[in-house]
Length: 241
Image 1 (spheres, one colour):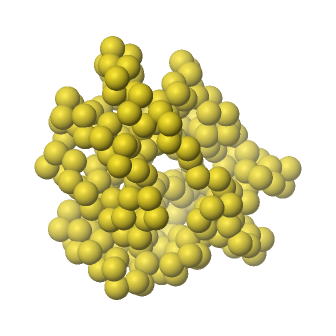
Image 2 (cartoon, rainbow, N blue to C red):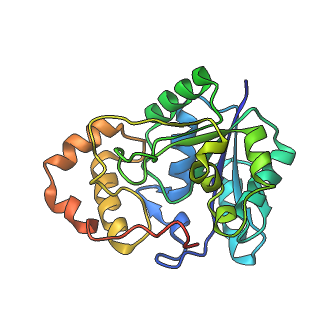
């Protein structure tokens, strides 16, 4: 059973433009996502899915620099981009990553993948009942299910790739993986300047390689001043692109 990781990435971000190529330590944000995904050990292939927009030429250049394949597709139809990748890199399972989550934990990806493979389910996500910090969630889907969704998903569901599945769970075999302890109060994604300040502090402490969530959470529990930096930031609603 083969597993394909797809990282969706583009330079245009309304709240923090060009964030995926910002430097964190000696690595770019995108490079850290690639490293974390690969270190999980569960992927047979990893591809960055970006757009045909000229502004995303920089992402293609970065992919070539760090040695990861890329695919260019529609700007707003991210699901279409994923299916374009699958037309070139067929697999049994697709793991979806976003290029604004530079602190992903390889061990959590590995655990979720093992649960998913053993379950035989259509879709798994750790975000259906949030206990992980924002930015460390994992999701994966059977390739035939993702192709089926292409015929069903419209509007914002095509932007969010998998949202049709978990909002129509009665049509699919969906697993929500809940991990303890509950660390959902932590925001470790990159979408604003305040998010960047926190993540820069984390990288300054732990360096360029992925850090496991337990170690990171233990350190942050002693640094409430850092946690407060971006605690006020609201996550975009599902219907927002």
